[in-house]
Every structure is written in structure tokens, then in C-alpha cells.
Image 1 (cartoon, one colour):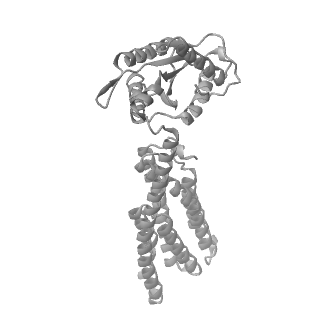
Image 2: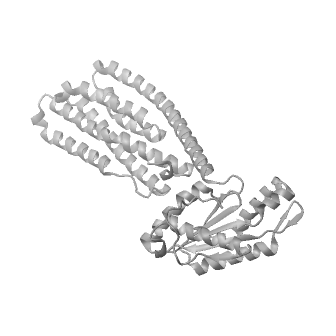
Length: 388
């Protein structure tokens, strides 16, 4: 799974991570409950005399094993679904715990299981230790599970002959250690999740920075080079429409020469803001391709729809210009527009070339105008990263 596939919100990430950890750590537990019961039963004094009890225990722990293995996490992974999965899976864990606790008590109290007492006690210690160290993400539920594993056996020992007092006291001391270890494991798990979330957020920020133009906060050339071929392929595969608008600020060098580079930067930022004001759909990708060249990718947009938006932008820019640092700055732009279709032969490069040629025609014909891409496809050998 890539970082892009991971949940972005902190709460959802914590739930998602907890689901993955719980799912991974619980798989083998059901197997060992079943094996521990089989050992206790088969090493008892007369296994066949307790056939019904033995088979009932096997059936119960097999059912718990199947419930763990077959309970898959939700595919969608919304917060309510993740929480619901955790609640149900913890239900299986708690039922398994009380089942083993009662089985351990049976082994301790039944004379026929005298030779299996050590097996049952060691298994209880192992299961409760695993609970303290592997399931500390939910501290209260883990405490409850440990008590369900432990208390039936402690009760059984407390009503047994005096010869079991040392075993009882030892198990009580070990229970206190488990509760302390559980608290520590809970804190460590929380710290680990916080560090993972911080690392994920840092990676996402770096990824955003790598795809964003630092001056205008629009997508950059790297973002365009990733989006453009994918959108073209999607349009060809699904028969959808994809319009591409390329724009150059006219005579931008004069702005830098006459007003300074700080004014030039302010002009570029204002140009990006004006783009956001006109091309407002969430599906539109607004990009700064380099220098004073900008682009807009408009999926599911016909040539006529895109032409109207492009003309609206051009006219608004020509009529209003920018108000920067208390002075009016007249600005115009040249625009080239095209729509991906069969004339491009499925080539993103050919499509880009047609629109780029239209942009150059707009500049050659006097600037401050929109030119539509010609019907004839251009050569497909040009890379979609030309310099104006």
C-alpha cells in the first residue's frame, strides 16, 4: 500500500492502523487456544471418558478460530465501519478469553485433569502475557480480557486444597506485573502511532510541495506531467471529453523590467488567483507550467464549454488587469485551446502539440486573443514539455 492509499485524517488513520494490528496479531491466537485445549484434554488421565467435554471444547475453540480468521476488515474503511469491525472482533477476543478462563478452571478443579494442570496454567500465563503486549491498543478491553483469562483459574485455586496456595499467590503477583506491563505497552503503542502519523503527514506535505508551484500555489509542471497523460488515457478509454487550455501572459518581461521582479511575482500570484476565480470546478486542474505559462485541464468539458470559460477569463483579465501595491497593472494573455479526440490518435503528445500550436498562433496574430486547436493533428514526436 502506498502513502496515497493510507487514510489522511488522524482519527481514521489511528482506527485503520489499529484494525491492521489487531487483525495481524489475532490470527494465531485462535490456533493456540485450540492446541492448548487439545493438550489439556489428551494429557488428562482418561481422555475418552471425557469425550463429550473434549469435543465440546474443540468445537468451541475451532469456532473462535474461524471467527477470527474469517472476520475481514471493511474494504471501504470509513471511521464507523472501522470502529464497528474493532468492536465485533474484540467481542470474539473476549468470548475466547472467558472460554479459556472457564476451561482452565475446569482443568484445575477436575481430578481427572490433574496431569494437565501445569499445561492449563502455563497456557493461561502465555495468553494473558500476549494480551498485555500485543493488544494494549485498547487498554480497558485488554484488562478485561486478561481478567477473563485469569479470574476463573484464581477462583478455582482459591477453593482448592492448601497445596495450591503458592501457585495462587504466584499467579496473583504475575497478574499485577501484567497490568503494569499493559499500561506501559499502551503508552508505547500510542507513541508509535503518533510517530507514524507524523511521518505520514510529513510525506504528504513533501508530496504536495513537489506537485505545487511555490509562488502561485497552483499545480506545477511535475503535476501536469503526471495528470495529463492519465487524463488523456481516461478520456480515450471511456469516450469522455477533455479540454486543455494553455495561456501565456503577454509581454511579461516588460513587467519585470519596468516594475521589478517583486511586482512580477505579485503579477503571477494575481494571475493564479484570477484563474481560481474563473475555473472554479473541483475537477479542473489549474497549473503553472513554467515562467509566465499557465494551463488548465478540464475533464468532461466540451470545446464550446471550455471556449466560453476561456473567453470569460481573457476578457475579465483585459478589462480589469490587476491592482498591485496601490497601482493598476494592465495585463492581457494569449490563449490556445483544444479538446482531446480521435484526431490525436490516442497520443497525449499530439494533443498537447495541437494546443501549443494554437497558443503560438494567438501570440503571432497580435496577442490578447484565443485560438482554437486546428483539426489536423500535429506530429506526435514532440514531448509535452516544450518551452514557449
